[in-house]
Length: 449
Image (cartoon, rainbow, N blue to C red; front, side):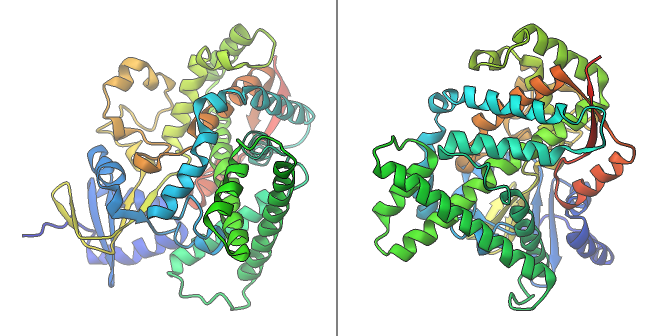
């Protein structure tokens, strides 16, 4: 006998469908309120939401081969194609194998100087706004993460390509539209959003072509080829013979790297600085730690393990606002998760945002409390209760670099500056939370008193 997860009453479906359009995070919260396993039927479409650590472990790790990339990421294929975020199976394994060496801890550790230098640049940019009007923090930290990405993974600068962040915003908006409409809106319709999307895609491909040409020329000149971009170029040349296929593959993989390499860390930094602005005691502890450990200098690799409280602050920010708030999958075959039947072709969602706030797993889960990440408390929780970087074979390959960026930036900005949210900033935060889960609050910059 097949046992299906419980679902909402029929009368609740119109409200859920509305939230699918305007408040996807609210939809996940409503589903979680019905239990740790929920099935939502929308006509022929079945949506399963699982929010227990053991369920997440089974879907993302134990039986990950049965769960391919799903809703949202499938729609992103119009730009990302079969890049590392959207591909599956042997294609994904080959891509991961090609870039993995560029993310090994030893190589990332060698990039600590570049991360610190870019962090110092951010502090200088913010300091220029002291006493002035509101600053878009997300915009500023996005510039930082793109700078780090260029220097550490691409071996080139991205200063000349300031269109990247805006282009990705348009692409993400289009992916959300296609997810909500299930691709029923034809791409040829002359809608303003469609036009913005096509322009953004052309711009991203132009940037990708230019970056590939630059790096290829230097590889031919004998420069070392151990960064992620050079490895992608080398793998594409070895595995593809058709020049057009090579060009398309390089575009897709590089655009994916650009998106994944800056978006999540920028969001984490935005929310971390927002939380510290609203919690003076935690902010003062970060500042005191940064002053003691760094003693007025820029961070070095060895400092990463000494900035222990700052690391906990970043971890707690990622608990409350995980950089990837939902992990969508599609079941390839019928399966059983926690005793519940999952039909082939069904959309399966694991929602870190909801699981990270589950009161059965976290005491007073809505409260900002970095001490949750004391080693003793971490050891007492299920391993999959906290998955800000995903889990299983598709665990984020850039997690070490992202943590280094977040800790260094948080320490330096908090040591040297005082950020204060502008009036009405909370409303902006809630709006961004509902739409994109991004942490971009307007703040004013002040000298440290």
